[in-house]
Length: 305
Image (cartoon, rainbow, N blue to C red; front, side):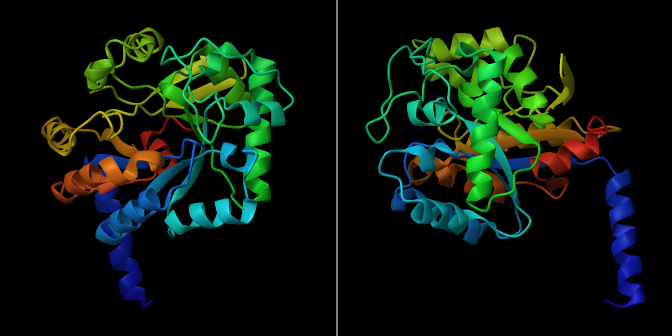
């Protein structure tokens, strides 16, 4: 790279840092349920159509603890979706095998669906993490990180809780285990089709002040502060492409003297059904939008110490 090119890059970076932008994070939740080829193909297509968009992957160690899991196959499936510049954070659903692997006694409830949801003959996906105490949660978090590290995945300090339900115990536990950024806060307005399930009410109870326009904020815990980067538009299972596009455009309209942070995403397990919504929404974004990984966006806020 020539000196003139370096100078130009530095100038563009400085201008980008000074001009208010919409900072958009796109994420994928890996639920730990299954790794079907149809969903991996859908993610392949998303990456092909959005080659310059970094993805924040919230990885789940439960793929490795399933009774019929083949570690090499699981690792290859996950790596298939990763690209240079992506981020790998942690996502936990309290699957029975993962909880047991952490040396913690499994609990069947409370659940945010109000019923069991099986995955590969196993339950626990729907159990709230807040069902466990801080010491138990620390074991589950630590074991998850260790499993993923053994498979070759180095995690950043980013986390998302099952069902977006990261209450005080969850936040205390993840901070104690070195995770300083959480993206579980969301607005239950996106989950109108789930009114008959406990999930929507539990999101409201956990995040009563969070709206679709909430800016990043900090949450103090006994083990340190957590930077909360809200999942402002939930995930594509519950939000149409048009709703996501409108959400991003509304953020552009709110631009004044500081950056606006927005977040959209999908689940790996339903990428074949709903992943296209994310692709369509991202393709429609205007020039005033910059794509960021979650940790990258958190650093821009100035809240991450």
